[in-house]
Picture (spheres, rainbow over the protein chains, first blue to last red):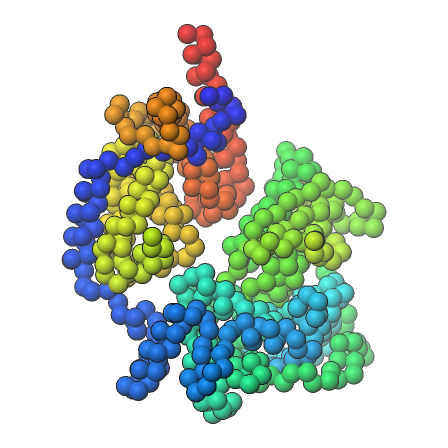
Length: 408
Length: 185
């Protein structure tokens, strides 16, 4: 064995067999523990969403039939009245084809807001978004190049390079992620047909997971999403409690995505003042420039994977100005990794060599390649700024340089 | 063969055989992880035993997220850390002479060689600080990414990177030293 080369292999191959005495000991004590406990939880207790459904004998039978079909056919539901089948993928496909969506939503404080979405048919991403929140005195417009957030009460406008208010309302992704979660985890997605006051007869997708419990209603004819309600949510940054109404393919009002700066508005471009605030950044004393860049960006990717918003704010001073929702949206936009209720994180990242560009005086540029959990790769260049504060060398991530490129 | 998830559902419904089947499936792997972490066969067996009994006792609260094998390895690592914290076992405790060694390799010579390697590795692993040993074992035996290890150790990724690098360097130096001794001998 050549120790220097084979250390990691030796650890991975380190293997012993469990002796029979351990088998006996585990068997005896496990069986004893099972016998000492009350019977396990019922299916109803495991899936509280069912309590609503199983209220009558007939509905119990129907629900049981649905369970059997769901178990047998995954997420497909056969129309009990005919031969037409429904699959979640139908809704995903239908939503991928929409040109615009005009949604009326409610947040967790009961405030109404309105949103226009114009997806990019090639990428499925929401390239253009208009968000009007009258009760929060906010109007926002997001385009791939620049975003504007207008505080109507203070009459101030904040400009942000690139998209930061994608808002997570990617309708196809919401539905797609339900299917993925049900497929990969033990989370429950129950598909039923029901009649609602608001929408009439619908296909209902009821999802119960660790972070969310939500119900989505699907039009049985068009397979499009009619509305959605979050019954429970513990996701930081989640604003939307319900999507009450969605109108598809309405013509976009003229100039909707062309922000007109109001007269006398205070203009607040991206703020760089905090870049040298000592409360941000990490200590990189004694490290080379490249080592420091790797260290701060690796920390950032770990914070993204952990959805650790405080850590992200510590590393990116400009994120200190963003709400949780804006920050989550910005991360999704920048990294290309999108999620609805559980952040899948980045599957891998490569941090390239730092370099300087005269056009970017605030810091050095560090190209990175991110791989998401679907194997898609994105190239992003981050700006890393070095500071000498209180005789210590520290650095922060300023922002990204240019857009996010999807690699083949 | 039933899937891990099917077995989890089975034991959560109250069927002990589901959990015992999981034990049978992963016992060698988990004992190896525990042994590499705790460097003492008795305590390694205790760790594996305790994890399964705990699962049986708390089965109603158990929710599988992700990969069962990795989940069990993390549970074993946590348990060994508790054991080490309590007893502060830092000295090398070589494997018993009759330790059963498993390997993908088949020939008796290779098995014998691996057996010797395991003993040697256990001895040098025991000389590492606990935190560094844990990072190396979780990374290379359990295939956990460093960010997961940082969560388990409740520390930052930079610290884990450093522990990993120091641990690897020390382990290489120790194994090189051992080779040098043998060469000289």
